[in-house]
Length: 429
Image (cartoon, rainbow, N blue to C red):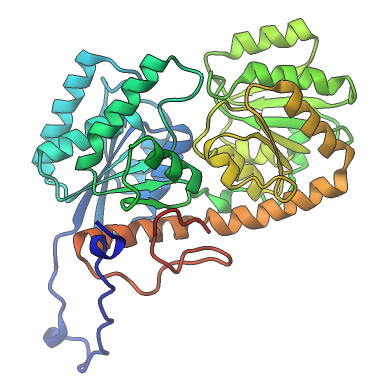
């Protein structure tokens, strides 16, 4: 199936009304199109992105719902904004056969009862169960956003093969895929998760109006950090994916040449105690703030923002840090390479290599003018690419074409973005 076969051409605009508004020119009322978003964890990066998709939906045309596992502050925000919410107590992130069967039947019952026109899934577990339930219910349109992958190079071959096999099983029942970056799209096609003609790149938006345009010096005072010392930090969960021990070892290496440097980790997670123990062993002080709802403001006070992840779809915290003009050092994994251009918008290092991360950070600390230029270039790129209006506009264009609806000619756009065009394979900015 080609792109032209998948999406119908734009419908011409209607002529101007020939009569004054009144009874003769009343528009008939049609039922809104019901869309169900299904996500494993309605929190953190992909959850925040999904919330922005829900809040940015055209309420005159769509009736958005969201279903996912319990927990997190996003449920209340969604409900307060008029989004219908369904929390699934037995939805787990890992494979759990009994719970998974229960959740599958819960989704089937929900989809049949509410008769959704579009089911839009996110993340691997919810993506598989949600698409299967939608297909069994003969939902007209089934789409899936690839925020990242359940598999990575640091897991066993058997487990990796199972995850890829499940994604391949769901491919024939998926009408379209949205990938958060070109590299993520390429990887999805490469493993057979998606057909090249059905995957479209849609940048994962961030709440730009909540992110400082530059450094917020007040945050240093709140963390009891002097204004004249370099600060290296990150934002993320303390889990295997984010490699917090690598961050600690990087910090210890940096201290050998910059003993005055301070280090901050914003976030919580099950590896907190392990990271703290490694910091004590290496004699390096790291401020662990725990969860903070002002994480983007704290990150804006860093001299260098670091991503030490072993794998990462795109990295919401990275996008937010770039939007505030922070010089960044990141591991060269998955979609990160699509936004961090070495020497232009930041520096890259191999994953699982703390010494390489440290050398890049030290270079930025030793070359503040170049670091500032990279931060400014990154801010311009992030604020044009990750505008919520662009993301929501591209998604709704895809919905409209998949449903055979009128496609609005005035698609949202920002300077330097692809917002005025329809999503097309491997297109990004």
